[in-house]
Amino acid sequence: MAEYDFDLFVIGAGSGGVRAARMAAAAGMRVAVAEDRYMGGTCVNVGCVPKKLFVYASSYSETFEDAVAYGWQNRGGEFQWQTLRENNASEIARLNGIYRNLLANSGVTVIDGRASIEDPHRVSVNGQSHTCERILVATGGWPNVPDIPGRELVITSNEVFGMDQFPRRVLVVGGGYIAVEFAGIFAGLGAETHLSYRRDLFLRGFDRDIRTFVRDEMGKKGAQLHFNHRIEAIEKQGDGSLLVRAEDGSTLAVDTVLYATGRVPNTRGLGLDKLGVVLHRDGTISVDDNFRTNVHSIYALGDVTGEPQLTPVALAEAMALVKHLQTGQLTEIDYNNIPTAVFCQPNIGTVGLSEEEARDSGIPVEIYKSEFRPMRHTVSGRDERTLMKLVVDASSDKVIGVHMVGADAGEIIQGMAVALKAGATKKVFDQTIGIHPTAAEEFVTMRTPVA
Image (cartoon, rainbow, N blue to C red; front, side, top):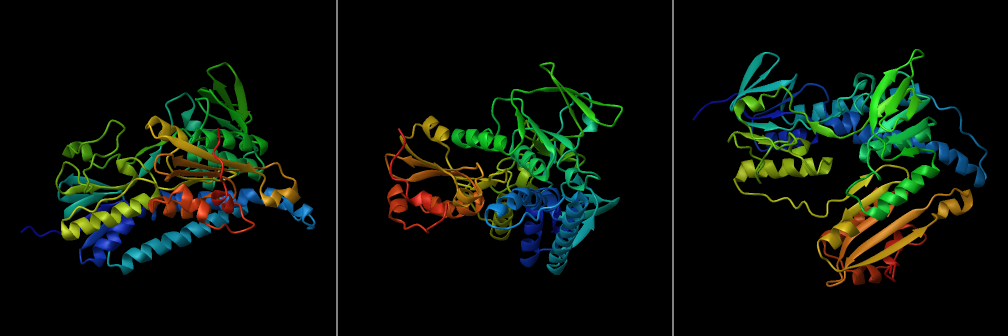
């Protein structure tokens, strides 16, 4: 039997890589992790964590305004970008240290540097080779900017949290999670904010009612939305501003352009092509149900293998992989009814099928909806509304989709996800007593389906 330096060599110290490394080490394996940039991965450094902190920051402008109606004198002051930037950086540095300590305390060897795979049992980092029985690729994704004139002038979610100055005018380009979230962040922090999307409506794949509702609510909050808007070029002006030219001939002058037009697998320089590892057309790594590639000793999981690109999914995949490596048995992951949230303002929370998905699948559906002004704003006077929606299979009475736009939607939908996993019917929802007064009680008080 060949002797290797490590039983498992993990490339990428993100959510999936760290979880797999720690669990494998706890199971007695000799494990190494190589990370060249973001200890803790995208989520911790330039993704979920800092993004939500910035969402909190941007929401205070409305909180200060609303407080006046509740008897508080307006204590809101001028926003200081440097304070937010530095406090965010301090928190991320703290989390980086926690991840590094978790690995070290688990007995994992941490190697700082970009790894490349030399052969099926050898990984090179910083010019030094390490032999290993198995290799796990967990390198995640990387922002993708289209090849247009002026692309070198834009920033992505990798750079936005560390900008030197806060822009007075900003254009966010894209129609997914990241784009709508940052449009809300910039608008809340006081920038003149534009969002450009090349199609007629953003958040493709979400329930149509949710998409149109968020469009209307974002418009109320000052974000200027440009749909069917295709950017042709970006030019730097003499005063340092950026002139954005669209295919329809229109122009827009801003100080910063943030591209959030999707992410591609972060596999550059890994050597996968040299080894003949099969990739899908979009560049994601092809794996079987055990996360193994066509090269017997090489595995991959998380965002680098494709949808759904969510931190909790990568964590679940890591645990399933280590269990498989220990027992040799297939550990199945149920990718159905995965809940998710979009931290736009107001938030989106969703789990299960959209109305469109259910109808396209031939399911006879009943739809229940409730739209209302949140209790908080009956006093503040703010024109913000909440939407809740249930998609029910009329043949079985099972609730197959739960969708919400409103404050703390993610917190509420997490509980709804448990109900869907348990197979709850609409009758169970109806028999559940609500908590009053809350927004969440609407989910158990909707009795009449919409026409």
